[in-house]
Length: 318
View 1: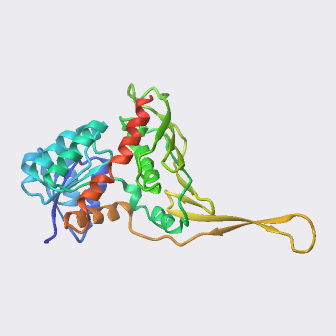
View 2: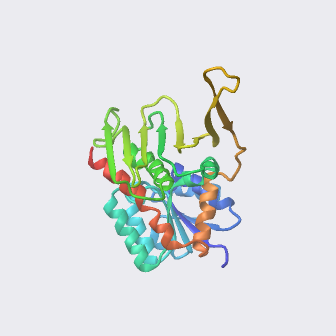
């Protein structure tokens, strides 16, 4: 098919990142940006191209596919309009601010045969991709940490805002299964946070087959931490998601051979060279493949729900 004409919803910080990627892609055309604030929308189109649209109705007439990077609270209504138009859509995580709305959107998309992708950006992190190739056997324990300094513009709690990325990675490490048990502790600390928006969450998960995982997210940290650890019985792989660095460890005990008691301990380290596209660019390439029918749309939709269900279960305990 010809290069798809893409319309972008949202000209905020994340929206402009998407605009940069779409406008520089050799596989698609950025034809318009929808934003209710004309100053934001026109500033983005002046920089990246396309037309500014105040409403979805006018913009969708010119689209073959859509990227949604508007604030989470608007995702449900925007997604319904896009599905009514029958257009493939990439929606920033989470799909909607509640599991019920997300399940409704995905069910409607399935009924109408509309491809949907969620902006699980860490799936396309070159460090994560490299780490997956180093895992020798099924993981038995996975640990994720995602901590940041406070940023008042984020209105939702850290679970939907950032921990959903790690819920997705963890679930995929265990075969995209839904955990048997979810336990969570939530903390509400910062005076600028909206009521009910958690600043810290600590999560433990039990998966079928006895795999366990833990994850923590905080927005009261004093530096950014993005770390993933995957432990199998014979090795451990650590990923620095910020630097996209990967280290594999394998520990061994070596018995003495000189007749003396005792043994030596040795830890082997493997540090592969990691390279790849910027994750946002790799994610958009995946979306274009989805639009062009090169990726199974049913499988893509099914892959979205496990992380949303994990976060919803965790928040019910708060």
